[in-house]
Image (tube, rainbow over all chains, first blue to last red; front, top):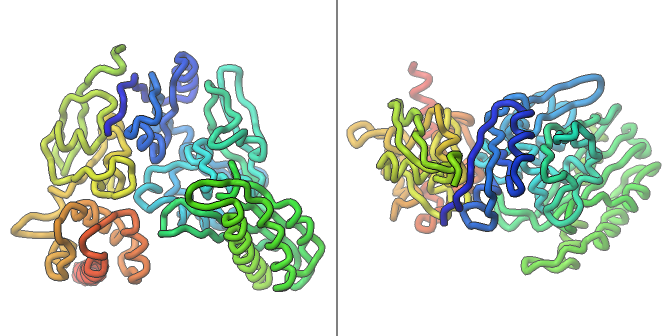
Amino acid sequence: MKPPPFEYFAPTKLPEAVALLSASENARLLAGGQSLMAMLNMRYVFPDRIVDLNRVAELDFIEEEAGTLVVGAMTRQRTLQRSPAIAAKLPVVAKALRHVGHFQTRNRGTFGGSLCQLDPSAELPAVALAYEATVVAVGPAGQRSIPFEQFPVTFMTSSLASDEILTAVRFTPWGGKVGTGFSEFSRRHGDFAVAGAIAVLAGETGGPIRRASLTLFGIAEAPKRARDAEAVLVGRRVTADLIEEVAALCVAHATLEDPFGSAEYRGHVAAAMAKSALSEASAELDRQ
Amino acid sequence: MSGAAAARTICLNVNGEERSATAEPRVTLVDFLRHGLRLTGTHVGCEQGVCGACTVLIDGFAVRGCLMLAVQAEGRQVQTIESLGTVEAPHALQRAFLKHHALQCGYCTPGMLLSLAQFLHDVPDPTEQEVREAISGNLCRCTGYHNIVKAALDAAAELRGAREEN
């Protein structure tokens, strides 16, 4: 099918975009378009106005400042995947991006767009949660920061107001020795994942885990931290038995039911993915 | 409808030529190429970004022509299958597709070729697995992909050879 009619604006400055967005009751922001364009073509959405962010150059950047790494919302997934700063400071982002759609959709798809789309099986929101990122949003009332944990409110819905624009995502890379792991199961490469897991572990080589982050996705309305599993990991040395014990805790986190899988099935897939992500992270930590 | 939804003139560079036509903002790039500019080599498949039949290159990058509006391509360099090669002088990928029987009905072929054109530019010496991953976003219902993969690897070798000669 073809998109329904809409008014189209392509501002070049952020304040212009904010004004254009807030001046319509039924406007949608167009980022990379790799989900919204399909939804328009299928007529799942009928916006009166499209505000295209693709010419707002100030939203496309990767900046390191005082121990943080800030990614502009309109940074293409391809750019992120090839960024040396991302590979060095946020290695899970680079690992996850291989699984985000296909290289052709990553040429257009943006980081901010994926976060706002908030598909439960999407990799990038899970990465933002894994690293405890902070989302920066701008609206008519000014700028505010939202911890990513509070960003999803329900299925595919963020806590942004209808007149707010996500402008950047702020990460604080972990210090010291860190190992990371990413694992997801999908039926074909590039398909939406059934479930996946991201592990970030910090500690000393061969010593106990100092800090642990275990994120599951595809299992609930939005990605979820397995806090109980993290608490078990901290202070312990990673062994095959410990990974088994921790992965078993993941099963109960799954609540998402759809025609492609029951919550129970997704929970077991997530547990298997957690095992593989934790093994990868722990092996990486041991090599340092 | 307000002026911002009305048809407008869209100017872009297609296959090295400045082209323009009139279209509403809601017209996708692939429909604009086919109906506005009568370049029908780019095919329309699923219109939801899944099949890759509508792949074109924008400033050298492969994109879904159905997931981009024509207005968004204003001022950009667009390359379609019409400029990849000619009957007299086909591109290395086109010769390899012919040699390895990498197409049957041909519907996916323009998208496959343009995806592979960018991929081989990024990754000149790919493994078979890398080729399979690269074309995982282009659906083909005839060939079973084996011959497409063989053709891509063969074309990659030829393109590497041509680069060394230069």
